[in-house]
Amino acid sequence: MCFSASASFIAGGVLASVGGFSVAINRDRKLFPFAAIPFYFAVQQFIEGFIWLSFSEPLVHHFQHEFIYLFLFFAQVFWPIYVPWSILIAEKDERSRRYLRFILAIGVLVGGYLAICLAAFPVSAQIHQHHILYVLDYPEFNLNYKGIAYFVATVIPSFFSTGKGMRLFGILIFVSLMITEVMFPGFEISVWCFYAAIISAAIPWIISKSYEGTKKPKAHPKSA
Image 1 (spheres, rainbow, N blue to C red):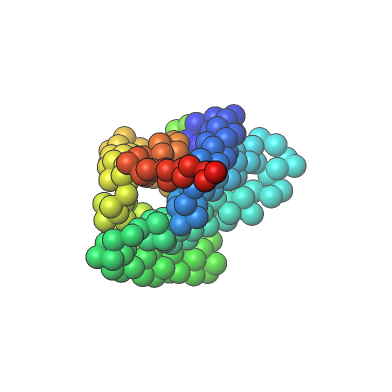
Image 2: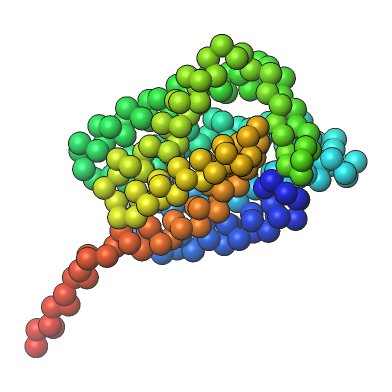
């Protein structure tokens, strides 16, 4: 979260409950990866809560570096791969699946590249203007290409899904990115992850929408 440790822990607790509800109401195993997204956001928010604490608590500060790497793993490596994969798994339309496979390939490339950067270059975090600023010493020559590829992998998949409610989910993610870029420049990693986490609370609604119009099998009368 972008404001305090307590806010991150509260968001994590709420999202863990939302994730449990989302998984509980899901009846399609192919939707399970998508239904579980709030769980992973909950873990990420808990991790950032510990990063907040690491600036004031000596015991937690000892593990600050590990928490930063874990948070950035979710933000930069996990999501660009998991998001298109979870939507691809749930998709039934073959034409949409072809597009989603291509997007997943982009996600794997950008996630793999960022994983190499995360392992090879120093990273750190600092509190600045009441937000956590992640300082990444990555190569700068291809930042625009990396940003575009990350955007394609994390935002675009929902627009190629035929699932009910998926496009609205994509619109909300896109709007949250635009708000972050305009209002919180430089803090995108922390702030957009928080907004996306909150938006993931809509996933149980998307899961329930996916079952609209499906008829339960009629019970056959027992023969005498």
